[in-house]
Amino acid sequence: MRTSSRSLARRSLLAVSAAAMLALAGCSTTPAAPTDAGSGAPSDASASASAEPTTPAGTCVYGAAGPAAKDATTPPAEPTASGTVPATIRTSAGDLAVSLDADAAPCTVNSFLSLAQQGYFDETPCHRLTTSGIFVLQCGDPTGTGTGGPGYEFPDELTGSETYPAGTLAMANAGPDTNGSQFFVVYADTQLAPSYTVFGSLDAASVEVVKAIAAKGTDTGAGDGKPKEPVTIAGVTAG
Image (cartoon, rainbow, N blue to C red; front, side):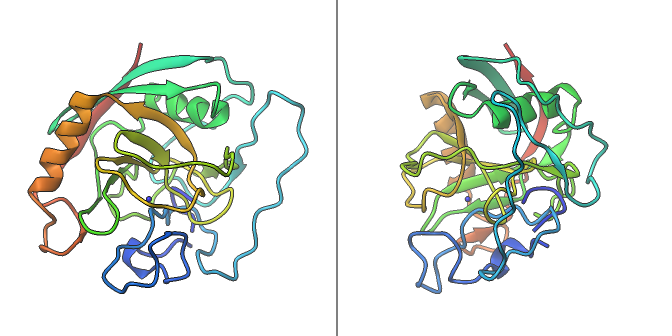
């Protein structure tokens, strides 16, 4: 389940077509996959994948992608974190203890930590909750609309064998190589195509925090919408 103002243009999350990347697509009541509609790239099935620049091994590419929803500096090209990095996403519903996998997704973790250090996530809403078909809470857009991002995007870090069990922390996107700032946490086992970069996991207690949010439903009572009880990220700290 491109970030910022790209394409997870990216249209509203509910407008993504059935050709989107959910393995469960085809049922009209199934929520669309996590999309980052914030970057500016098209989210329709005809959109071509971004050409991945040739860069030295061990470096990351963060390309411009529309206006930033909140002031943010592009992360350094060379990641400094490695191994497992503990972090805490502090929310109005409770703290989420996460383990970031800097070895499996070095450029994603590098971006997430950079945005966290800049205060990009501070006082931002989790704008999307799904309670049917897929089971995710989506955050990372300062505008709360699902169309906001940091003004840059970066390539996927995928093996092609990704799965999304409860406790997964992954990036939302608007198609191949359109990652920005929007991410989602999975609170119950979810079937998705292996198209979303997994960059960490939540501990069991944190999954229960998200389950409690989901138990209250969406603001409209539908299976896909804003959380009925608004959830705000107070900040993200590492270590």
